[in-house]
Image (cartoon, rainbow, N blue to C red; front, side, top):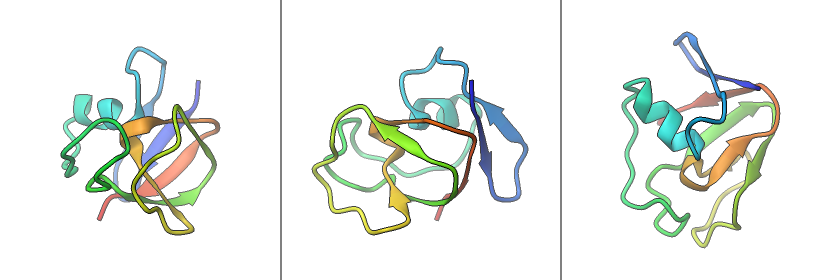
Length: 84
């Protein structure tokens, strides 16, 4: 399973026990804003610096190129992200 590296932090191994990247980040006590879990509000928007993600369902919030919503995605490969 892939690793999630938050800039300036140790890598988190995504083993599939958590349903999304957001859940994995929360489990590791990462400070990340969110208000939903369905890709609607966009408050959890992060920068995807490298690697690729897979959306479990297409987000309803606007997502710019180079950004993604961890509330409704899983890593497809090892990823490096920045949490604003």
